[in-house]
Image 1 (spheres, rainbow, N blue to C red):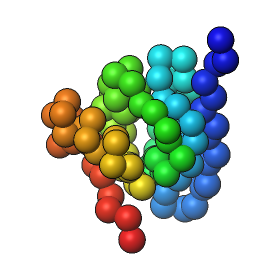
Image 2: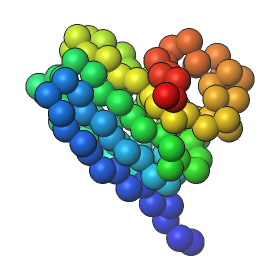
Image 3: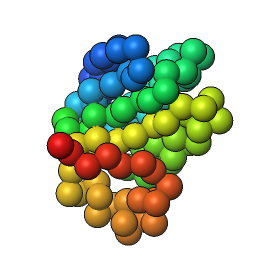
Length: 108
């Protein structure tokens, strides 16, 4: 069985950190995402953006992690926003009722 990959690249600027995600956010990859976001939250920027453009799949574990990270960011006085959220993920967020729990920035 092939292990799904999640590749994450980070772009740092003075007022935000953007994580470009590509691949699957699931039980096998959420720890990788959590670790990176938690490292950034040690010295929180005003804004953390998760660019979801390359995300092909997100399971319930992934969704739960996004909500947890969003709350952690709030506690750290930072904002965690999702950008380039695909239709499939928006549908899942609507179905699960999590859309309101996450900040989704509309694409420019």
